[in-house]
Length: 302
Ligand SMILES: Nc1ncnc2c1ncn2[C@@H]1O[C@H](COP(=O)(O)OP(=O)(O)OP(=O)(O)O)[C@@H](O)[C@H]1O
Ligand SMILES: [Mg+2]
Image 1 (cartoon, rainbow, N blue to C red):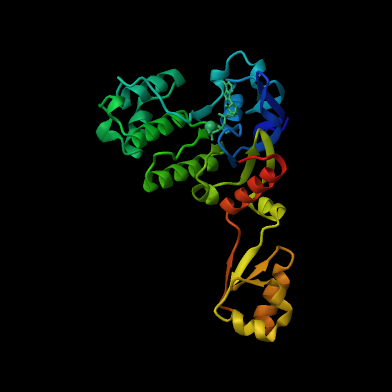
Image 2: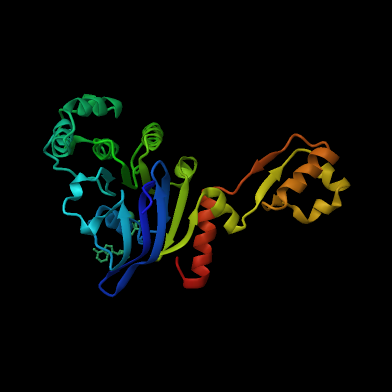
C-alpha cells in the first residue's frame, strides 16, 4: 500500500443487472493531486464516484481510499471524505445555516467554521432563509461548503461548477488549490473542460465505462498525437526561404508534434531570426474530442 495515495482503483467493473457501467477501470490519485474525471453522459463517472464513497460496491476490482479498503471498514464516517453530489438536495425547509450546522454536528466540526464558510461563500446574507428560496448557484455554493466543512483528505466533486457564475467558479477552484496544498486528493467530474484545464494534475477519460486515456495533460496530449500550432506574422516570409518547413505549414500556422518542436524552434530563431511567434498547444477540449472521436470510430459512441 502506498500511503501517499488518496485513491487507488484497480480493474474496477460494475454491472447494473446485465449492463456494464464500468469495465476494467484503473487509476491512482495522490494526496495533493487533482484528477479530472471526464466522459460523455452515461460514461460511468458518477458510478465511479459512488464506488469511491462506498455507496456502490463494485462487481469486481479493488478500491483503496485514504489507505483503507472501504468495503472492509466498519465505520466509514471516520474517513475524511468530502462529497458534492451531482444534484445538491438538502431538506429545503431548513435554512442554509441550519443545514451546515447539522452537517457540522455530524462531522464534529465547530460552528465557527460554519460562520466562516457562509461568509467566504457569499451566503451570509441568506443564511437565515429556507433553502427553497435559494437559487441554483446558491444551493451549489452551500453544497460545496458542506463538502469541505471538515477539511477533507479526499474531495469528490460531481459537476461542482454547474450553475455557478464565473466568479464563484474561480473561487471554487481557488479553494480546491488551497486544499490540495494541504495534501487533499481531489477528483472532479465535469463537462466544463476549459474551466478545469488549468486546475488539474491528471485526467481520466471514460467512454462507455472504459478508460480511454489517463495521465497528465502533457501525457494525454502526447499520446493523442495532436499538434501544437505555431503562428507568427513573419511565417510567410520564412516559408519562402525555408522550404523544408513547407510540409508542416497549414492554415497560416506550422503544425508541430512534440519531437519536431525543438528543431523547428531552433531553425526559426537561429537561422531566420524569428522571435515574434506564439505557440498554441492542443486544449483539453481538443484532446477530449480526439479520444471520443476515436472511440466512436471503434465502437459507435455518439
Ligand atoms: N442505479 C442504476 N441502475 C441502473 N443503471 C444505472 C444506475 N445508475 C447508473 N446507471 C447507468 O450506468 C451508466 C453510467 O451512469 P453514470 O451516472 O455513472 O454516468 P455519468 O458518466 O455520471 O453521466 P452524466 O454525465 O450524465 O452525469 C448509465 O448508462 C446509467 O444509465
Ligand atoms: Mg454523472
